[in-house]
Image 1 (tube, rainbow, N blue to C red):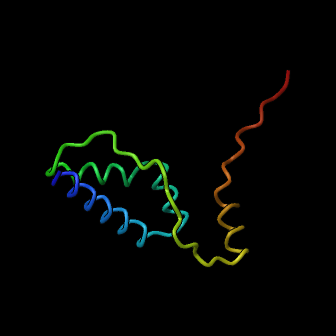
Image 2: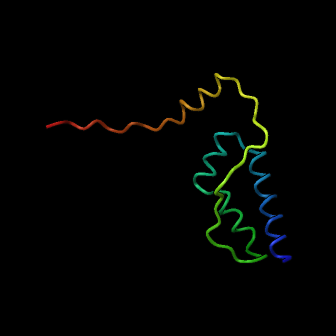
Length: 89
């Protein structure tokens, strides 16, 4: 229907805008915390009320040119804290 086409067009527009304006690391965090899904849900309310919008699959069409040093920096910064040490009794 026309509503489905409008929603798909709006989704494509929002995702394209977010992808082109973000760095790789920021984009991954946006996918994880569902910022883009919430934005799609909010902006499509005028067309049709949506709920539980989530991006479940991402396909990389063109790989960015990254040098190995920058890639290692991204992975080292993203490493979560190990936590606190617990005393053994």
